[in-house]
Length: 283
Image (cartoon, rainbow, N blue to C red; front, side, top):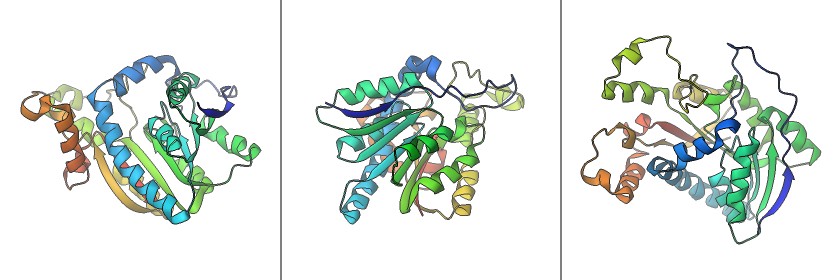
């Protein structure tokens, strides 16, 4: 059974952007498509395997050092698999997303766990979280997770101020984001030169899960440095799986693929080829 504190009404004060104006992206209308496309196969298993390895090891060390469960915030959580698993480990977790449909799916997953989970749910853009957390008198967090959020924000750099305000002085930040270099590299391999030559190319984001405004690792690293964060570990998610048009040999064994992805996910230079990058940083 899941113990849940719910605040599941979406924020109604969002302005409707002009046609060419950037806005924070919600997957509310394509939640089923998102679940199937991102987590319905081996790609999602690889993604979760790398994040589990990186985050669970570090969170266990933090919890042991502090002598208590962690206070964890997952911003733009989507289906919130990692956050729910951390709650199952006994941590206090706050889960947020702009999409009510995405969090309904996350809640359904949490309900399947046969133990009480200390989870608070907030459906709102992250900019509205500050007021909601203040109302609940929520303390600062030991770990803040932001996975696949930066590339869907209208002003991604601005979220760093939010992290600064809500992270403890010795807290950790887990940031996972789409790697724009992987877009170029994959299309080079696939021979999609016409797409790479088209400087006006935009994915159809009504259903596409390819962001049109990804943030390069150098930019994210510059934000972390400017805000006095030190990288603890960095990994690539799917450093080779997506680049193999011909599936042969070990590619036909999902367990072997995950094993090799985990092996090379933290090795230079392979990790920087990941379709997504994960950076775990501390203050």
